[in-house]
Length: 165
Image 1 (cartoon, rainbow, N blue to C red):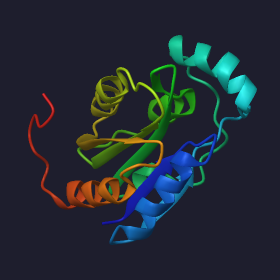
Image 2: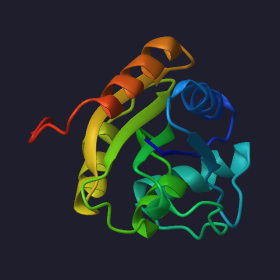
Image 3: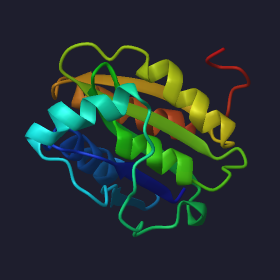
Image 4: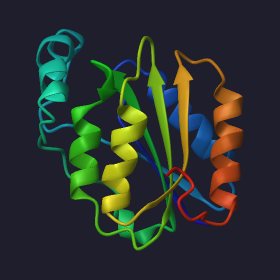
């Protein structure tokens, strides 16, 4: 299965998990870093990024390097800011083509509280036609091997109707 592993990472935590997952998936996983047109820095992420999260802002992204429609599956990774997923991920999901039932695995990295991220993000993806097979939370680099195993198992399993209803 040809899998797109798309991620946003400010500090490198999420990037490390994305790289680990992509390197261990069978069938040709390809990494794609999601980049805002106007990058966040550590200070601007705290000041402006948090406000963008709260306001559910769709920000402009740099042109994608990969076409998500050319892949059989999607693994999407996001850090958590202000108890929710980051604006670059919201913009990426907004820009995705219809998934037509393609399997998707969500992974979040967080330090404190991930709030409603694992409730809201799957709904957005499902509205785009992606079949969310797993929702994985990894706290500050913990449980990386477990996250990799869960991702691989979810992509290998058949789609379950209403698995997260």
